[in-house]
Amino acid sequence: MSKLQDIRNLVQEHAVLVSSSPGNWMDYMDTASRLYRYSFSDQLLIHAQRPDATACASLELWNEKMLRWVNRGARGIALFDETWQNTNFVMCLIFRIPTW
Image 1 (tube, one colour):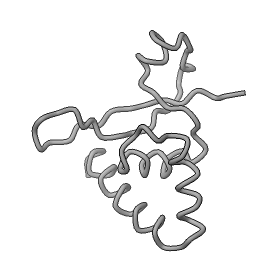
Image 2: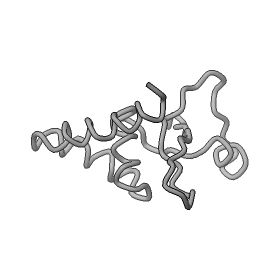
Image 3: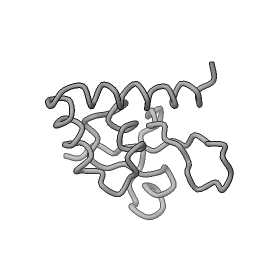
C-alpha cells in the first residue's frame, strides 16, 4: 500500500474515532482550536499524528519567514496538498517547532 493511501485511510479511521465519544471529540477540538487555519481533514491528520502540536508549518515557512529551524531528523506531519487543481492528491509534510 502506498503512503498516500495510508494517509487516506488514517483520516477516515481517525474521523470515526474522534466522533465515537464526547471525550475524543473534545480532545480533537482542543487541537483544532490551536490550528484553526487548517482544513477539517488536515486538522484530523494533525490530531492523529501529533495531538500535542501547537504550531505547524512547512519547512520553508519555518526557515525563511519565521527564522526558526527544524531539527535535523525531525519527522514531519503528513497532510494532503490541496492546491492541485486535479483530483489526484499529493502528500506534503509540515513540521512543528517545540514551544517553550
